[in-house]
Image: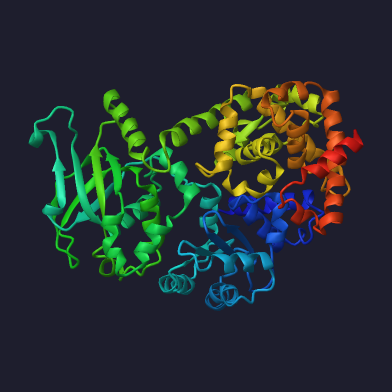
Length: 588
């Protein structure tokens, strides 16, 4: 785990080296706030600074607002040494009370944007506030954890969480670091009457696999998932597991579990969970104080449908006292469908894939989204690598590529011609060949929709079925867009970033605006078929960079002069293309 703490330290040093123009970046505690918003919330770098409020007191350190999903995150960060314990009184009196109370009273003065958003959303029944505390060590405080449980039980619209260093690492990689192993889990039910067995012998039907429908308590699902985590067992099918980290908890499920009366109706509200396994035992009886008298075992389960249900059950019940679990949730059930399939058998393996596909086709993850698009990104990753660029689809890809490319000589050879064309200096570190997937999707959105979308919708780029996500996927699949077109567009952005780093103000050219204006004017209203010709040689590219470096710098000055809005707020506003048009004509 110390290695991961070193990763955070290295990232902070890189910020301090590259972002000298950012106030307070030289303070490690402040830079850790920057790290949290950048690495865990995927906030656009240009917008992070104004979302950091404090770094050395007991107030809200930073925040995120997602109006589309009606979520607000109030974040506090503790950049602690390995020996510094988290104070339970701080959690009770400051983390859980101070900031949220001021927002509730409408008296929070340190961020008008945050107060306005809270006031606007607070009466909406779907509104949720997430209070999240990140601590850079693993010294757990039982008293603090108990305060969290009590707070969540008392506040239906708020979800408080503490993330210790292990939790931060898992969230950073957007996955539980799991290895394949064999496990056996226990499933409970009321009695034999609440379990329906389907098997070949009883039904005398061809192509019927052993299966079982079980009315099981949510506590049984919670323990099943918790056990899988403890054993580092990958319980979610790989297609579904990728989706899990992206979505988090489901509000409707969470609020139902929160309501002491409504949780009894959980069985009727929920579509259920589907598990595929290698084998399951016969049902036996057990003594139970909570009416769970039937029990059986399942070998090597894979959850292929219901990941949000399982994840949300776990996230809620982990905050409930173990002594209260059975009593509080003895009447809360969920339907569990278990299928026994031999994946070594080719026919049954094909059936397995179809079950995964069709069980999810009615949900937000449809076949096109979680299969075709995942393979689409993997295809891009492979094609980019052939040309010397390393696309990061997951955080763990960083370590994968660092292990593969101990030397960057081959990468330099593969991309030298392209880099020369764009006037980009060949890097000497493998990190500088990385192409984060969300960054590529932002570049595409800047071309198709404009700089405003690229800057303000970063959090939606990797959200399945969001408008920016679909915009990028449609662009990638467009017959007029070649692999070279995608790489050229990305390298135009990279060249703009290089020029910005050289500039004294470290603000211009404004990279996504440069892509936006290139698309609108040079590519004649965003015609993707023109990318190839308009980026065909070094001289043309230099002319584009020079022109729009001047245009974006003048635009920022003109915008401030007209509207009294500075750079940080300007890039959150829609672009005034009439100003751009006039400036472009002037500089040409």
